[in-house]
Length: 410
Image 1: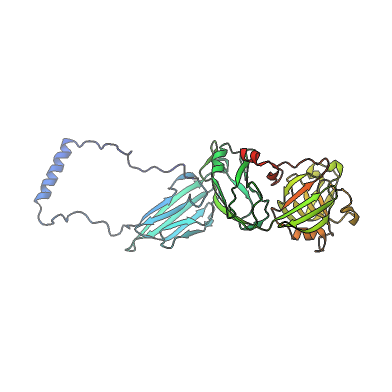
Image 2: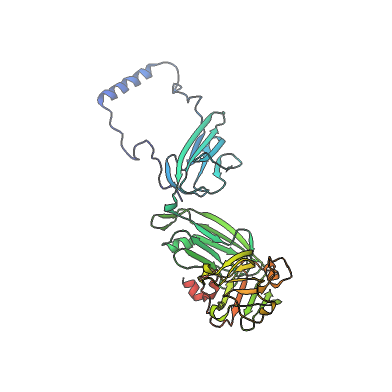
């Protein structure tokens, strides 16, 4: 966010007229001029010389001293100098914590190395010298915008990650956004595969982007967003200005047929392996539709009370768990069911189970193999799950279930 309050200078308002001199002052001024005209020598060299102790270096800080509600981005804070070079620039947070920063090669500009913290008081001290070695100093005390007056967005995927073709770019704001057009316009997404990503709002706090079809394998996607200074809602300003990129890996699409309890794993269009599974029993049928792996855990705890199913199960060490929905659908390892269950019966509470060992130590188990060969963003399609319904597009990164005209309309 840009600085919203600054300290005004001590001069009068621009364009204000000076008071007229009284006749007595004018007469004295004339007399002084006459005396000056009678003095000898000089030839115009009588003007006072600049003090040899005053530095010519002119330092400017961003923000100015006393500013409040300052943005936390690296572009919101800094220092620059003309007719000189910096000898030292320090930024200190309340409590004395030093904030690292970077000087340019010419030592004339400085900026912090990372974003600052909201609702924090800082002191920026800049020291410089001119060509004659004379020192100049400028100090700015300021406070960053408070959490109550700002909004941040958490985003997926991680910078520099390699993901599957179904990965969506998802922003989740910590406060409701009312100016959705301004927020969406602040996001720029480019792909070396030439695909255009379009945004869709799921409520007031989530904005997802995806192309019409899955990302092209091997493409590199770059995301930049500048919410800094945008009034996202009345009195609520964005504070982020960032960019990140990710690489799309090979295409892996796994199709689960709930009628046969089998999953077919394809990479780049070729069948890689067929695995027996166990999907949801009739009263807890697995969702149909296109789902995307959004989380991976080698081992996790699963408790039915967290998904509103009472005391149905409590398993502290579920191996090779990969999340498909926010509501709790996973494709995971199962060591507690008999081997004959997989490929033969639907016994789960909505998840997709693969045969595994307790502790997940057998790399040859179907669940361990599938986990090792999966990426965040890989696609899992479920078909023929009787009574499962179609997964909601905002239940996980599953916007692919929304037709393109409806996606672009939102």
